[in-house]
Amino acid sequence: MQAYEFLTKPTNGIITIPEELRRKITSNIKVIILDLNQNSPDIDDINAAVRKSDMILPPTLDTRDWKFDRGDANKR
Image (cartoon, rainbow, N blue to C red):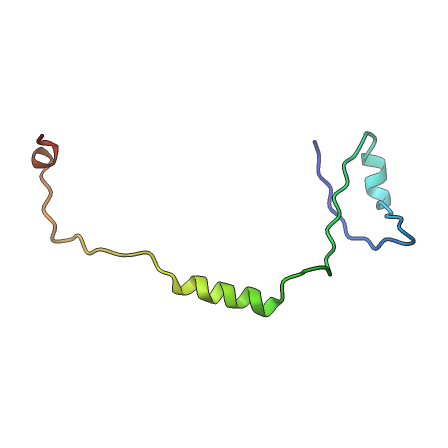
């Protein structure tokens, strides 16, 4: 399966496939329509989410002074 992506605007309900793709597409196709204006997230909302995710840091432990003995760890 090969995927092609292009932007177009329907005219009277008809979607025109660009000429360079018409020559490549010779079999059955599946069409998925993404409306770029419908429910598009606001750029400010995206930036706020990114800033919020930057504040979430993984926990850190200072293990430099920890002593580890494999034999003690494996005792039953």
